[in-house]
Length: 478
Image 1 (tube, rainbow, N blue to C red):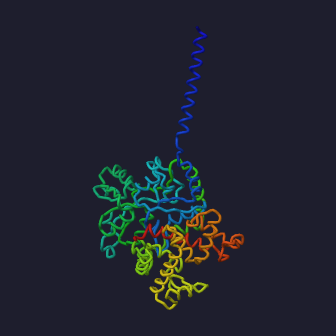
Image 2: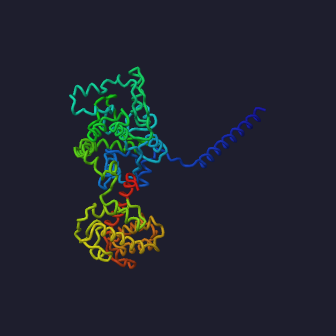
Image 3: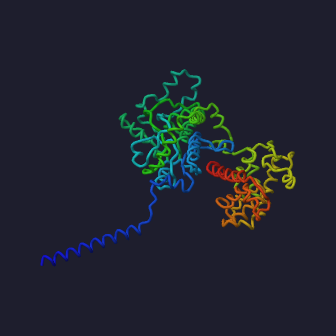
């Protein structure tokens, strides 16, 4: 009897083990591969792009005279260059949405001045701090402050945090400013009416104080100091916090990405270039002129003084005018008097023969030059229309041809087709063979009709125009 039970339990145990193993294998096979923050840096290298979010402001990111600028933009670009990938920038001034995009892995890093707090540290990981700042109250001086003594001005300003009791203070929603004010309200034993605004960001609220639309807001001290140069009526001398660390944010578990950024930032902060960048955006005496310029996307919203003409003629080729503006910036930096070493002239940098064919000369007005350049683009569009049916792809081929001439681009297409690549796709296909046209092995190939080409110039021409166009779309209304 004992032998019988032994055999029974032995067989039952074996069956349970086999069934359990089978279930585990099945579960393992059926479970999809999960993309986790742990492999964020690997994915960045694999896709060759760093996706970052920053905010649109007078210090972090804006367009000035056709060129993207900003402290965090430049830092993010430098880090992307350091690890050898492209920077893909997203603009988001709503902190809730920015945090959500990070947690949904729609971006890799929040390149914003994020105040390091315990609450935030529970949901994201912070990089090594970029700098430190106190939070300060933003308020208006008396309208006649220039006629008053400093003592008379001081009497009308809040200098003691206890005086905030009963006051209404507007701050950016989900910000560290709101968190600090809630704590301060408890500390002073009085009610501060805190209005968390999800529509307006930090600088917009500062502007609203300056214009008298609201009485108080809170910002980081270094941002407040910059804005007080734009609006001398503002006072930003009342601190409401001790110094706090400001850093970028990455997803929890993005260990390799965090370590990579930390290593780069730690070294870069010791360089003169970092000091230069910081001073450029936060201590620059010219910042007022830049801020007030009509060619600042934050204020005037213009790319150049030729915007109206560019908009007019962009319609003739059914292009977004900001794309045409990016092409013109690439060619002439909006200088109608520039002449290249090869004789190309004007805003559109047309060669004399091409310009003459389409009705322009060095003596022509800027409008005639733009009109001639657009006619040339139309001509190139006709050359590629049957070859490239996708309109967005065709634009890339037109840009390359604008720089190198269509003959070299046709050669690159033939080389791509011969080598098993898609001759109707630019990036990763035809552009590769345009680069190779400087190699004798390729420019002596029988399918090549136009010989040697220094393809790197046209390759960069297309790449830089499209990258700048993305910046224009971020900051300039259509």
